[in-house]
Amino acid sequence: MVVNAKEQVFWTSINSVPAQYPWITENIECEVAIIGGGITAALCALRFAQAGYDTVMVGASPIGFGATSTASGMMSIDGEQAIASLVDEIGADRAMMAVGLKSQALDNIEKMCGEFDDNCGFKRMDSLRYTPDAKNASFLRREYSLRLHNKIDTELITKLNSAEQFTFPIEAGVYSKGAGAQIDPYRFVHAVVSKALGEGARIYENTAVHNIDKDNRDYLILECQRERQIRCKYAIVAAGLETEEYVKGIDRTASICTVVTEPLSDFPGWRGPCLIYSEGSPMVFLTVTPDNRIMISGLANPSVLENPYFSRLLDMIPVSERRYEQLEKKLRSMFPAIRNITVEYVYTSRNGRTEDGLPVIGKKPDDERIAYALCCGADGILYSEIASRLLLDQYEGKANREMGLFSPGREWRVLH
Image 1 (cartoon, rainbow, N blue to C red):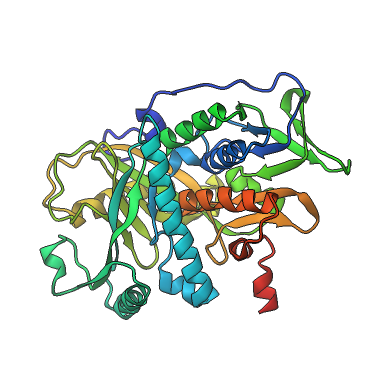
Image 2: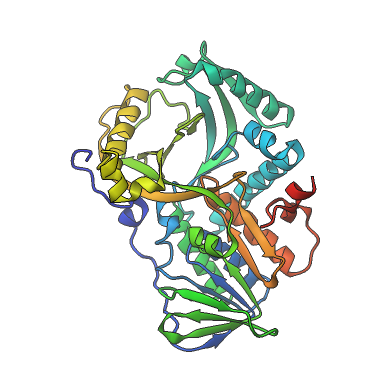
């Protein structure tokens, strides 16, 4: 274990609980029921309540204590994969559509936070995607060209000019101005839920939904713990990785390790400071939190290694502790000019990824009364905002070609 570090989730450790919500104590009815207690569910509840629909949001845990609590709070058009990788995966038109949607989502979240009493620590930041490996340099030069020709405010970082800006080796990098932001995801989810409540949504926590009964053609019945039910016309499943049980789509899961320092006064050798994403595997990403701590995450392990039996078999106990030490060592090597780096928090979270890196948003053909929002990975917060808008459009019958990009069946892959 990193010396004297607390093995606690950072965001829920530094924040008090701003509000508590009841669990369901009686059977209730609504038009739209949203299953989940994180950012995706909260944004959907807000959008539908603002549109005038009788909306209920129900989460199995306290608000914000699921995947939201372990999110980095980083938001960027960079995110989990380079734009060039997305182009190779799904084609240029669809890739740039996804990038445009993420950019719009970033603007929308900034505006939203500006309207809250608490801005949730939102701060616009530049974004760096880099590689220390000469083998990946040509790929990032291609990434630079792609961004430049799509009018993204970008500059190329080279081996020759990187030392003027950063204290770690860079063979090639793409520095995009204003392309990202940092937020406190725990404060954000509570601010969104509070706003949704003010718009008329009913919010429940500590109430798990264990089954969706679709037998009646006129309504759905969500069967909850303590033998309570929610009867609704329409349901959105937005429960993090648990959504995959209903809709499928996760290609792989992994454990992500995170190390958070004590607050720092300055950041020499770190231009901006900006969001930082390393290109290649394993991916490592860094940010500065609203209270000036460095957060470094990555070194993903396949989830099989979480199983104590396999860990012992592979002589990898304790896997997470070794990863924490590796992350701390990497942080210190990257920024030798930053003084008084002291790790205060370490923790491990579980994350998932779809095959193409895109979220799963929308209805399945087998029942038009249920929609899904599976927004995981490093881009989860931005995709959650996108999901809230697209799902409302879909519910209201508005034609939207963007929805097809994220459809559960990925029909465009089959057709083309």
